[in-house]
Length: 194
Image (cartoon, rainbow, N blue to C red):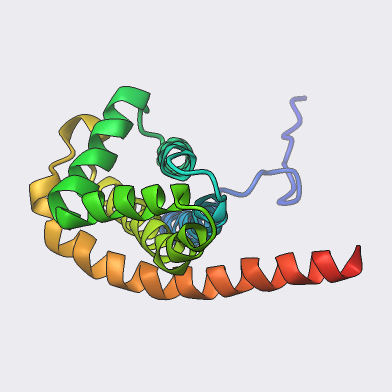
């Protein structure tokens, strides 16, 4: 006599509701990525402000460009996009030179004032950190915007990003002023502690 086996409901695996899970997961992933990108950019703004405070002329510019390149590399990793140092430099120079125009010359001049004994370092300290931080913020936000639209470094068009970059540069200068105050106050606190 053949016996009929029955499976209990507990033994049967449940199928996940794929329609609802996928949408929430994508939205959560996108939100997490955007928040991570914002935090990365802010960290690199602080680093740019700190680097531009260094009293060595022209070292500050090289340091800020290196910081911006590292930021682009990290954003590229976050968005799963290919990174090339050569293309990253082109993006930085195209945005800073093409959008700021006079700004690139200003940055070099502000850095060069650090060569003047005494007062030169103070002149460079007044505005270079704000410009460096603002530019770093604007570069980062421009890269994120481009990546969000599906682009890569290979198809980055600085001409299309000019207005967005200018807007982000102004926001970045405000953030850089706050970062400069923070870096300055932490430096004073460390000096008084020692």
